[in-house]
Amino acid sequence: MDEKLNRLIFILVAAVLFLMIGYQYVCPADSNTCYFRSDDKGLFQKYSSGFELVYTEPEADEDFPTKITSKFNFTERDLDRHVDFNIRGDDVMVFLHIQKTGGTTFGRHLVKNIQLEQPCDCMAGQRKCTCHRPGKAESWLFSRFSTGWSCGLHADWTELTSCVPVVMNKKDKNKNAPKSKRNFYYITMLRDPVSRYLSEWKHVQRGATWKTALHMCDGRPPTQDELPACYSGEDWTGVPLADFMNCPSNLANNRQVRMLADLSLVGCYNMSSMSELERGRVLLASAKANLRNMAFFGLTEFQRKTQYLFERTFGLRFIRAFTQINSTRAASVGISEKVRWRIEGLNALDMELYEYAKELFLQRYQSNRQRQHQEERLRRRRERQQLHRNYLAQLLRLGGAAEKEEEEVKELEEVVTTEDYSSQVVRW
Image (tube, rainbow, N blue to C red; front, side, top):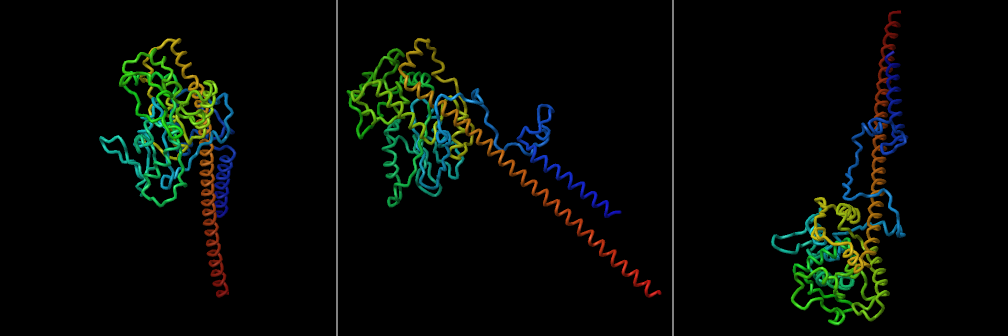
């Protein structure tokens, strides 16, 4: 009787476990295949707190559509940005800092806010930090706050691509090491052109000039005729917005396109090498291509998404979350629609570049979120499969123990029966 009861209990336990395993495969926790209405949650989801995502989705800093209507034909290669950044090896991250795009804040994040095996050493009162590789006296970061303005003040793409390899080779302590194996990963920040332009105007109005910038191209700086100054004194302090807009050689105009393009394609700062229309077309195409092929770029208007994409691209993690600050000096400037149209016209190339960059940025974000969800589903599926294997192993152990116990009982019964039979034979 006890043997039949044990077998019945074993069969019932096995049946329940089999049903649980079957339900997990047919109705996984992240699926809507089997959905029962109960406070707007699936039945399994309601009671399965142990299977929550390890990574918490960042709070949305903007209203973000689930599907973007694409104007540009980006390829999978354009959207898939993952860098196996070898901080111990020879990889170098190069930050192209465009004025008034939030680059100072982002640059500080790079030296003070990344979780690293060997964090950057930032001494109080010093402008630069020492960002060495673990175990090496060699920098992995080329930026204002690590190496300083080694290629000139706010060096652009044209300057950096020709200057950075030379500077890094000079800084290399091991002079006998091969120089060709370094990988340079360029990154930058962009901003809405009207806001950026107004911010630069306010900055210049307070006395900023950037007149020590080199503007090197094809091995030389521009001549005074090629790049005439907009003011005659030491600076342009107090300049009205109208005067700021009226200077034809003002580098604030289309600054983002100029700093991202290969200027050697248009004769550098020689405006007579081609028509203005052709020059603009070439510069814009070059800026788009360089931006698209960069390892990473962020947008000032999307701080949390910028943080997320950087972390996904480089496999690095920031210690503190980025903060979206909308109360900037540019935001406090009240301008008429007519002035806005004038600024947009002066920055027509930047307007088109920003539209292109924004869509590429948001599509990359959406692509990464989808890829992350797929990775999480795969991880949870593997966890469930491991859980199922553990269940089955435990079940087999329980079944084996029960069978062993039954065999021992049978052996004991046989011994008792034999002894009883022997005693009867003696009696007979």
